[in-house]
Amino acid sequence: MREQLRTIQENAEQELAIVSSMQELENVRIKYLGKKGQLTQVLRGMGSLSPEERPAIGQLANEIRSYIERKLEDTKKMLIQKEKMQRLQQESIDVTMPGKRRSMGKKHPLSIVLDEIKDIFIGMGFQIAEGPEVELDYYNFEALNIPKNHPARDEQDTFYINENIVLRTQTSPVQIRTMEKHKPPIRIISPGRVYRSDAVDATHSPIFHQIEGLVVDKGVTMGNLKGTLEVFAKRLYGEQTKVRFRPHHFPFTEPSAEMDVSCFVCGGDGCRVCKGEGWIEILGAGMVHPKVLRICGIDPEEYSGFAFGMGLERIVMKRFGIDDLRLFFENDVRFLKQF
Image (cartoon, rainbow, N blue to C red; front, side, top):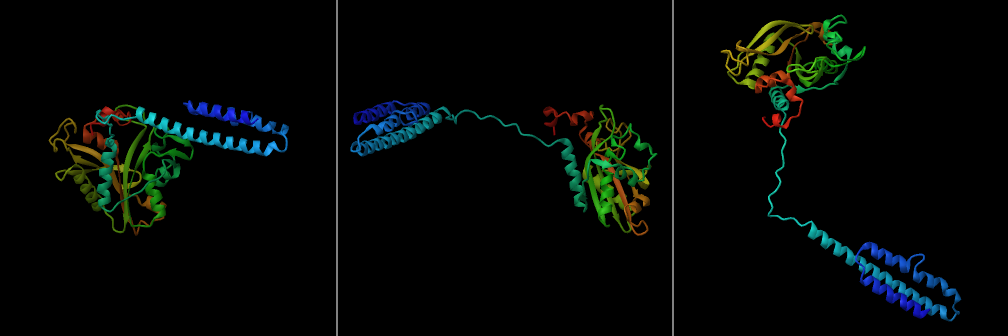
């Protein structure tokens, strides 16, 4: 048995010397030290030895086991180092090769103009307010002085989830929620996505963006509204910009008006952009209707306010000379790279 153990040691040493992979190393371990390995089989046969021989043979067997285990560990380290060197050679980088140009994204034209508008109003002391896009009928219509029989509630114009829940058709509900939660003075703008049941074409989309503003305080007048919007127009389009207000009707403001700006392309002389009129309509505005204030728990005898709203896409299209609304949503990199 002593000779058998020595033979196992020599054979294991020879095989480990020519091992070239982790799998071969594992095969050698199993062959000699596994449950059915050669050394294990020898140890199981020690019961046939005399009591005098067992201690010496057992000690020798343990020494050989320890020797083979050390050899296995040394060979494993050698293989790991060898594989690491091979990987480094295979993964080497030629630093003299030209690099790959990374394609950098750019701001979307809607984001460019929206950020400018935010900066203008924040500079005048306004705060940004947000609200849900899936809105209660009460906030989207009723609290804005739009009763049940109003044409704006037509299912052809509005996406109804059910009788009481709609996709908001404007960001005006944010104004109602703000007036409910906060006491005057209030000075906010509420930009965001809105939804109307329009067929997609060059000038219409069921999804678009609005920016609405609200100011409520004591002594707020139409003069404050006109002054605020004139400052906004001059900062957006340039100090030479002129504004004009035309009477209009909105259910939630009284009196109401639409605001035009002098054409920023021709300066008012008439061109293709302004269709020869010299003026471009950009937003609607007016004094907050007393009924709306009262619904929100604000006393119209003590406070007054003004509100305004504009379509972001319309302003951006005029700003950059874009003639098709669909370009904003098609994610064509060739289009986006122009801005």
